[in-house]
Length: 632
Image (cartoon, rainbow, N blue to C red; front, side, top):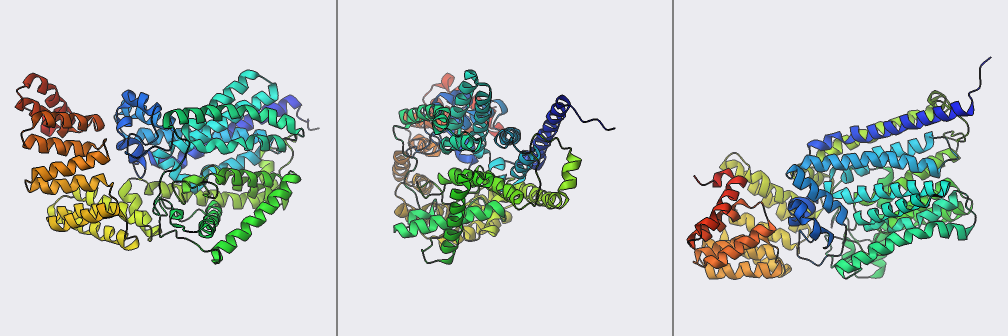
């Protein structure tokens, strides 16, 4: 006679099963994204790492990172974001690993794997009435979802990964508090939630999810729901206070161009909301069919939509139906309604329906909301009896589970395999900027910024590293074609005209270059790069007063512009103003501490002032950074 396992034996077996499933999720997260470790910096990484002078200071820059806006170390515009924790990590990595990209990718991969395990833990608590296989399958779909490639492969998106990971950690401690009533667990939950805020402010939407979770856990007393959720208002208030203290402003957006967010071009309310609803439809589609993928969807790849457009009507009808079911499902506590509520709550802050954000559409914005869609889909399959999940009290081996759900498991594995293949392949596109933009201009051929970025890579990296002059000219001509394509798509892109000007400088066409620089400045009078680079033309013509005027204008627009300080220092030194050149070269080093030539020419200027002993350390530093500048 076969013995029935005791409750203790069942509990031990269940714990082992949970451990094995958790390890599978961690392994999948690692294996699918392992190929990112060989990738270089790409896309937005420049603004937070390679071109961010505070991050490049390493530990010395951490104090300023905590007390300034998110991109203070990159540009001279007023800051509207406060996300110090990812920048602090980047600064530490830059200091300890000498600016190598692999450590950033490794940390993203590690945190993504931890997120997989933490998500599995949280979903087991939320859906404790169901078999452990349900949260496992939901988490596995989340881990392999190709929409996450941007977040994992783009080091900059540490803010997305860190924010969600610490929200999950906060939920784990909160559940401990709810189950065991330990105040220390609540304290840990609040600290973790504050840490999530310090990665990215979008976690504010989870304030609505705490009561939602309690509601679905059969808490019937609304007063109890409020009291158990209210403590999380404290970390929010503390974050907002810190943000106001540092930025002196609670606004989350600055002036936007149509290239940053197509909705900036909407001149009527109807046009704005019609386009926003179409974009919501695109988010929903990408949640279910994440292909093809692109790092950028800028204008006119995504345009404006009128209320009469079919895409608007279709998206409106679908979302109206989903919202209607959401209301019905919440009333009857259908789990798929929980998933829909999760999706709508977390997508709300990036949907542009309530606040206008810095982008019209981005795959990274689906990183958390897609979880809600996956939850809804799995529970919908349960409702139509396409898959069977017994109650948690009924122990079930994995063989039994597969036997009872053979067709579902077969289809599920096919989805996992296809998603995994897309994820691995897409990660390889993020190898570097040139590879990424080269792939994505094919995916989104009408994206102005993609053609601009691709042109930049051809103009700078590929041309500079070409083996011979013929190859350099080939890349230069290709760059000009891409940049011309960008202005053909959007003829008011100041940055592209500036790069076209630079390309014509390289082609020894200074008059044409000046024309493009003037066009760039006409479109954007604050384009400091155009003033700086135009100054180089006049410097080469030995018109030093005009060159100095242009460099000073560039610095008046961007007081943190290292190249402009270097160029001004060179001009002043050429004019014999060595004290002025010393001051300029020191400022160049302040904002670009790895500029070997700035150290070298600072030493030259000091030598010309007979301050030889003071000059020597700068010559030594230049030689350390660039062996070709080492003095014999």
